[in-house]
Image (tube, rainbow over all chains, first blue to last red; front, side, top):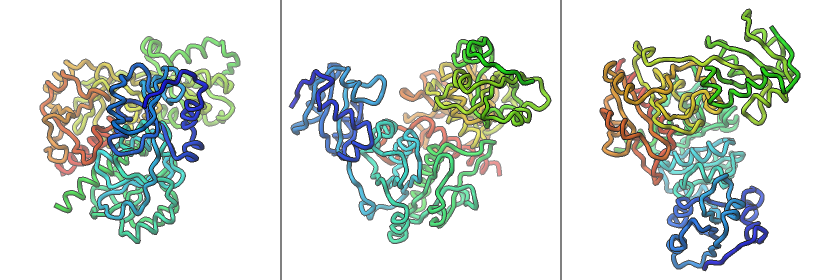
Length: 265
Length: 265
């Protein structure tokens, strides 16, 4: 079902553009993705696509393949309208509205391996990059505790490069209930911290570990530090005082998944 | 030596602001750093500070400590002038002009360990983050082959968080001469590539390894792939097709430096 929209003032366009704001994303439980590949990832990963906007740079046949026989409304629009809806300066000619999922901690019940936990990680680029790395490493899931960047903000979605559709992500998790869940479900809780920590290369990795990465400037919160069974750190040989949180997450993810695989061989 | 400058039209201010452009950085061999900490790192690391601009938010005593007994010209200016010179939207009240160094490959002659080589890595944030990670890991140096983001652009300097002043970085290196230097100086050249690669966890790390990270979209260049002794890759367990280049660099850096240390124990 393809319709033309020509006016920037069309209410469907306006409402789509509103999804750049968290307020409207939360109200409606929807978010935007931009670009051919990301929209394709959403459709093939079984996420619900609410509507698609595309301009003349995208062949209608491509849209038809994406939506198959479903009744998703597809809007053929000018590039100006795409620019109005998209968050980037030079968007590709396609934007889609996707229904947000509400994964719950309980959905991880049968999982093993490594869960990456973000504790007040505020920069959307960091959150997205970490989700992409968690997917690439094969992590069991990613938890966004309260006060992280909004999972569905355009910049997080873009930095995650489609990985948002692959790896289980539980967002807006309250710290206290997360800690309780960890001890109930036997996930060992580790917090990255340079204080009193165990060197990442000298740890015994067990089969269910949740690793907490802290805020860019202040590190992990008091609450998570108190709840942790271990503090863990990446040994640094140079003069830099700290690592970018996404790099640190990447090192933990790959080292952890690798060592867990060795341990269960 | 502290002077007041009150006019945005002052030629000293204009010339400082010009250093946001590569053209002027190259012509004059100077670049800008912003923020108390970065300026401090520059001075304590022995880099030559050409001049300092600061506003009322920075105590003059702090400036005096930074420049000690040297004759660096320090300019007391309005915040508007700081904003004119700085690249960020909300700059701290201090910007300095630093003399660029010209490290050469020959300066790495006595080194061992891991050299990280960037091959057409274009995003300044990636280049800066990788330099910070290389410093943190304790890499022997970072090489920027031709066609990378400019080392001295404000965004690279900012993302590197002072690490530019710690780790040897050789920039604008021509690929062919780099490959020749590697074979002459016995640096084993590895290129990250998913094709015909060796798993990073199954490699024998030797004491002098140069690892090439390729362009964000296209990976390593043909020329480097041909010159490499080995292709190496990070095994990925999830559905993501690739890793952000800075994350991949981080994983290689820490795994490499760790394994090299084990091998020489």
